[in-house]
Each structure stands twice: as C-alpha cells, then as structure tokens.
Amino acid sequence: MGQPHDLSDSAFLKAVRGEPVPHIPVWFMRQAGRSLPEYLAVREGTNMLESCMNAELVTEITLQPVRRYGVDAAIFFSDIVLPLKAVGVDLDIKPGVGPVVARPVRTVADVEAIPDLTPDHVPFITEAVRTLTGELAGMNGGTPLIGFAGAPFTVASYLVEGGPSKEHAKTKALMFGAPDVWDALMRKIAGISAAFLEVQVAAGASAIQLFDSWAGALTPGDYERHVMPHSASVLERVGALGVPRIHFGVGTTNLLTLMGEAGADVVGVDWRTPLPTAIPMVGDRAVQGNLDPTLVFAPTDVMTARAAEIIEAGRAAKGHVFNLGHGVIPTTDPDQLARLTEFVQSYPLR
Ligand code: CP3
Image (cartoon, rainbow, N blue to C red):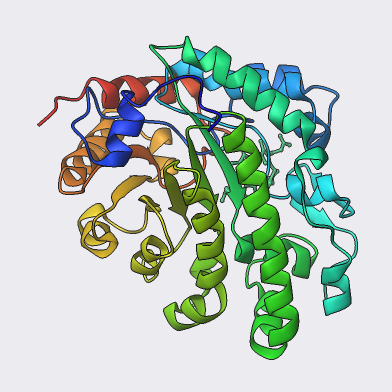
C-alpha cells in the first residue's frame, strides 16, 4: 500500500474506527473553495477544470483550509466530473452553474464511447496526492487526506441531464425505462469512480468519501434496486485497499441504512436528519455531520450551541466526525468557520 505516513493515531482516523479520540475531529465539505480569499486569489485566471488538472494548484488549494483552520482532515481539491473530463468526455464546469456536458448520454453506444479510466489519464492526481500527503504529514501533528469520487447515480445525473437539475427527470426516466442503458451507464461510471479512488489511495490518501449528493431523489426501493449495487461495487473495490470509506448524500433520511450497507465505514448525514434519528439507522458504523451550513451565518453563540447539541448526540454513535450537513456556502465568513473548528476541537470529551 502506498501509505508512507502512519496517521492512524490521528483524531479523524480514530473516530472513523470508533476508537477513543484525543478531541472531536472536524473538517468541512467544500472547505477548499470559494469561501476563501486565498482560493479566489490563486484561482484568478484559471478555470475550474484546468485548476483540477494542475498538480501545483491542487496541492496549494487543498492545503489552504488546513493552514487556516487546522481542520482534522484535508479533502482533495478536484470535482466529481474531473475523471470524465480526464477520459475525454466533452464537459465544462460553468461558474455559478456547475458541470455542463456537451452531448448527454442516451444510448448504450453513448455509454460505450466513454473510455474506462486508467492511472495514465490522471498523472496530475498521483503527483498532487504524493506531494500533499508528504506536506500534510507535517501539519498539525499529521493530517490525513480524504480522496473522493462521485457515486454512479450523482455522476449519471450530470451525464444524462447534460447539466445540473432539480428533478433528475431524464436520469430517472432512463433508470425506469431503459434498464440496459442504465445498467451499462452505472457500470461504466462505477468503474471510473473506483479507478479514480484507487489512484488517490495508491498515491497516499488515508480515507475516501463517495459523494452521492443527489441520491435523495430516490425511494429506498429504487435506490436498492437500481443504484446501490453499483455504489457497493465502488466501495468494495476501495475497501480492498484497506482505507476507510465515507458515504454521503443529501436528503437521504430514508436511505441511511442502505447507504451504510452499501459498504461504508462512516455514513455522512445531511443537516435535515437529526443524529439521534440517523445513528440507529447506520448500525455499527460511525457518522459524519451534520450542522446546517446556514448556521454559520447566525451569531457565533447560536452556531456553537447547535454544534454542541450535535456533538452530544454524536456520542451515541460508534464514532463521530464533525462536519456540516452539506458543503460550505461560498459567502461563508471564514472567521466563523475558524471559531467553529476551535469550538469543536476544544469541546470536552465524555
Ligand atoms: O473542498 C472540497 O470539498 C473539495 C472540492 C470539491 C469540489 N467539488 C470543488 C468545486 C468537491 C468534494 C466537489 C464535489 C462535487 N462536485 C459534488 C459533490 C459534493 C456536493 O456538494 O454535493 C458535486 C455535486 C459536484 C458538481 C459541482 N461542481 C457543482 C454542483 C458545482 C458548483 C457550481 C457552482 O458554481 O455553484 C461544482 C463546481 C465546483 N466544484 C467548485 C468547486 C470549488 C466551484 C468552482 C469555482 O470556483 O468556480
């Protein structure tokens, strides 16, 4: 395994394994990005996907929130559609919009035209992760790097809709009405996401997060039948490498049990589901979450009072990694996230 730095005693990895922690670990989804002035400064003049393919920029942007907040984990700066771009899918990430795909997928032939991902499609990822894990080993006593990929359903929603969507209607129509296309598409994306994660782990990532952000659009029955086997195949491939796996989605109150059973060590919980509801649903797994990202806009004492409730509730879980219930909102005041980090890390242990 490509793990030259032993970070197994870090608060983050201990919480993930359900062991006693030196303090409650905290990191933030989308901590690397537009809420940081230093991010906007280095991104100036370089578009999003170019930035993701530039190992030096990826390294710098990933480290920025670790330097600023002293969070307990870094998340690799990239995007869920980057692996598709790397294999040659014609797509862009439009500022303020999100991923836009030039020729949406409709047929099995469209799926077959997408190449599988191999490590030589993403040499900049290997380079960035190697540099990052070296740097992170010396930060705050050793900070683990979380690699990530998009789960098949969420990535499919961009490929089939051609861009962001609210209802995911074309995606679900394909799922319900064209099982052969759907199956081919899910297998294709699962292979690409798993290969993308394998590259990150081989280069030194300590854990991975599979983002199924839009899985909450599905009933449990449809999730279990049409989506879960494919997410499970990604998590199984990464599990074979021995790194812990976090599985996260938004609006997934109905799906938390299944998302755990898909092969997660940690289930990410969005802010709509109180931890006392979520914890019994995930079985013998740790939880991650789940402060409403808008609470950062409230007065500090209101925000920290809610964080305290979440920490107290998290004690009933096998392990708890503090996070927001979804990504940092771009207009967030970084000083408020600094106060939140400090509050969580200095919160009394049981
Ligand atoms: O700090 C981190 O979390 C690491 C970086 C990261 C990005 N995207 C960078 C990014 C991560 C983990 C992602 C994952 C991602 N990308 C998801 C799953 C997570 C989630 O939020 O649910 C999804 C659904 C996407 C697709 C995507 N890419 C969206 C919806 C957007 C936002 C569109 C917008 O501009 O409002 C992007 C663009 C994107 N990805 C940005 C960043 C920093 C903004 C690009 C910019 O700076 O212009």
